[in-house]
Image (cartoon, rainbow, N blue to C red):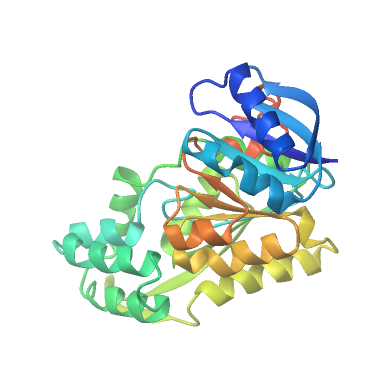
Length: 297
């Protein structure tokens, strides 16, 4: 049996469940048992039939709800691989560093184009980092303290999954100066990111080592699955931008959950679940987890 999960940001009425069942029936699918995960917020509809057909039938309802359609098997994932900026945290760290340097509009415009897939990620990152040359290293700690905050639902998602034994990993096109503290705060157990070169207490405008780009993100996901003897169906990958497409696509291809979080259009087309209305706890509802079972600290 496959499962369609309807998730509301504010309120899910029984009428919406009835509409979803009618849409599934109209597509030649066979809706079955309805189970409320959280009354008024999230509900499962079991059905028989093709996943893609169910997604197509329910797509018009995505204007109001976040809808996950997946196989019932391996619903609770044993691997979480997540982007950081605008996914696990609310800001783009490089844009915030640029603000301290007085050049935020210039860098933020490049960031937006890179996340939309309009620019090569590695080239755009190298160009933006070069503009930060001379910035005092102390600004990083200041930025962390003043501006970097977990995305709503991030702590609950990571710690709840870790609680049932899932491995949680941050793969970021951002910087280790931020990913380490963020991972420690939220509870992620493994981190991969880019290294800012710092000399005499100042950013040089260069990176050290290989760049963590879109291809690297997918490679880290695939390696984590292989190392743990899992299948991709047991994986959940989540991100918000074009450089997350390969790792999202890898999860989708393996019948895992490839989630686009408040995504740019290019990413939403690659994902099999888009969260547009709710926070990151939608990924717990998608795994069938009641609020009473969330780990909040």
